[in-house]
Image (cartoon, rainbow, N blue to C red; front, side, top):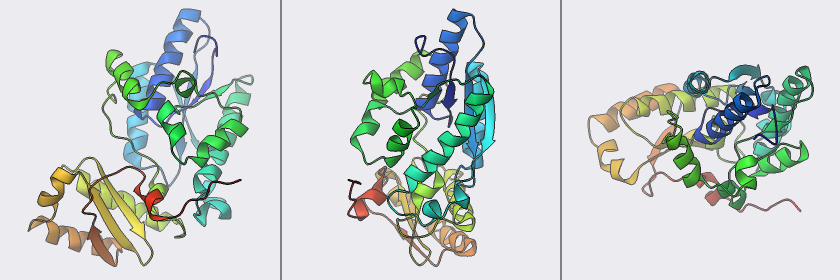
Length: 265
């Protein structure tokens, strides 16, 4: 980060971007120059709780924190929700970050992409490469486990925070992304979180079907009465037409396992 110098960081408040932001802030202090900037997207696909976490962590790190509204929901190529959705999202995000960077004299942009991300289908990484976004964690072959070790060493409050991809990632490919669906998912996940479930996902499939994923050890508690009855009522009132529980339990990126993904040539 010292070599990169003052920069703009794509900052979700998750552990990856928090470690990059903390490293940038430490390098800034050693250099004695102006501080780097952590930038958080404001979007219907980013839940309020995540924005609150980002603000809190930025204050902990003592780094300048800026929120910018992104406009991915105005893009048909994003809302149609094919397997390139993440590419269009990151393309829009980095465009917004580029404006922040330009306003500060043309700073470089950095993201929290780690080495493990390179082994999954992540079209957003392609958008980052095209936008010349630096990936210090991935470049140093720092994987997720090591990111958490660094975060613990630096006493970051998000060191053990579960991954929290955007709400659009909960919607099955081919089902259009709408603000109403994003709100429904956010409210459903908040309801489950308030009842002690973590990690969790509420995934939305065609026909407004909710597929709930919780940790395998929590499946028994989830399906017991009266909780399961309260859940059915609440989810139905949100607008889900049917609710299922995934017996395989929580697993990150499970929507990718339900389609035959073809990497772009």
